[in-house]
Image (cartoon, rainbow, N blue to C red; front, top):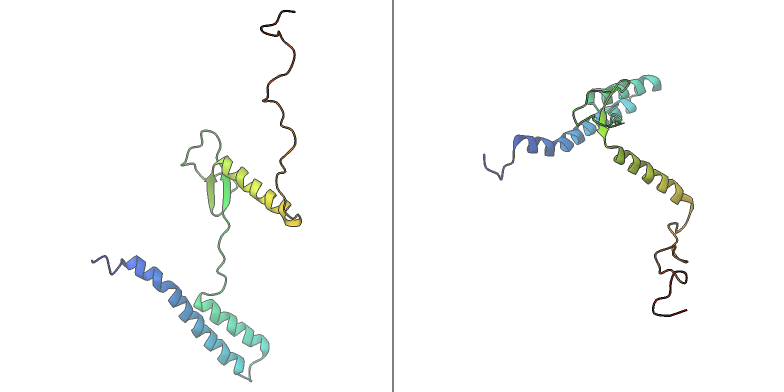
Length: 141
């Protein structure tokens, strides 16, 4: 296989949105035909349209929520599923969890204020030379 052609997986992934668009277009045409029909009640029309979109696989495509589980000490990378966790989960470093918490807090605090942030200025504490006290060198008292 030449590198210019690409693998089957690549080609399939590129065609996926195209196929989805075609499905959507077909479903739309069918639903328009149902909408134009006079002899069917509104409730039945809605049911038929819902059925069409369901068959096309365009209804109810919700991404599952990922539960983040904080890794404990000595847990390792290959830990088993924790108790009480259903669905998708991801074991994360505790630092990642605290970073996300900090981001959310900063976002929440910054919504109402304009130009928020750390204010610097004033006198710095410590770090300078101490004045007075101690023995004076080179002078006799």
